Amino acid sequence: MSKTYPVQGAGLGLRRTFIGSLADDIPPPIDFMEVAPENWIDVGGKLGHQFHNISEKIPLVCHGLSLNIGGQAPLDEAFIHRVKQFLKTHNIRIYSEHLSYCADELLSKVVSDNLIMRQPCRPQLPRFHL
Image (cartoon, rainbow, N blue to C red):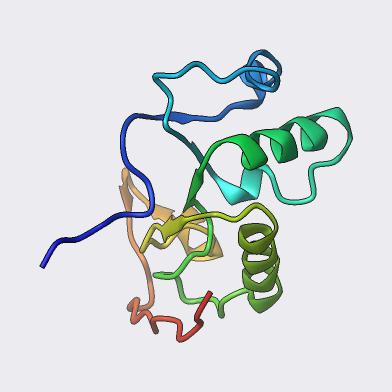
């Protein structure tokens, strides 16, 4: 049994600082681009147009940064739906996310030089299908 993957080859993390130089011509060594959806959702204007053009020319993969799946706060379902729409709009082939505790106020509670959470973290993994 052979496995095939939605993207293969060498990828480049797409950043706003150089999107203009790639909007018209993507060099052949680049087989796909990686983006953080949080950095591109709802971006309009010239940057949004350039991003859309790139998404039509080369496969995109996404790696999310802020779902806070390991945190105590409930999942932001509205944000999850925005990510889903972004993935559909730009035909994203792969989406991954950190399993991390990254957005709760408890992270700011510092005792001495060490970070101490005052409540146990018992993450509930989401049951959403993108």
